[in-house]
Image 1 (tube, rainbow, N blue to C red):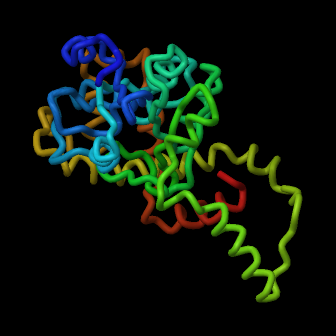
Image 2 (cartoon, one colour):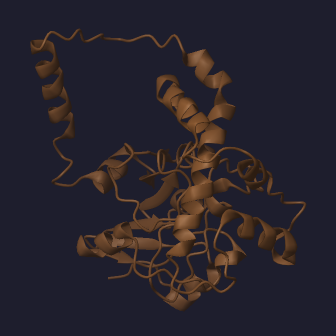
Length: 288
């Protein structure tokens, strides 16, 4: 039973909207980074992917209907995971955040690499949660960083976020974590309570390092993702092609809307370089 009085064609025309209904009395929303193999575009906010087709639904889009969710539409994110931001949303899940704060859906789905759920949620006065990387499948979701990407709920209340993540395979995670602490203690480990974080300021000062790591991941991830397309209307197969098409198309608003993140990424290391791994090993210490 659909709650919104909109036809799919009307929702598609609006282009900000993907709502789902769970258990017939609550609704969820997901942005167009989470591919669905239907007539609605999965653009990631970019004209380069208009009419592009993936071979199948993303895992999350496939599994939601299996849990009695009804997909109604999609939202647009900031382009390519906030690689080309042109607003103050401060994160790529801005479409889902707006839909949640307007009450278009009880639960909206966003994608985060480093702040793209949390920041738009803050700007729109809603609850955003980035689950542990790997808790929710990212298969066929438009990627940015294989080391940091995650899918999470964006809701008006903490309770709704908890309901969205509740599942028989994850319901006992806290108990399992606490049990692991007991095992560690029995093995002689020292568990430090109320831990101080002496590297907090260093973490803030090294924000640029995180950007470089994400960019290095994206160079590789974009090529892998584009290679999966079963219909690639502009024959874009790597980040250099994506940048060239974006800069040459009047639809993309270049140079007023720049490509500086991609420019830097193409001049820096990629995630198979030794320099990348030295930097990446530092970021977990800094909590990035």
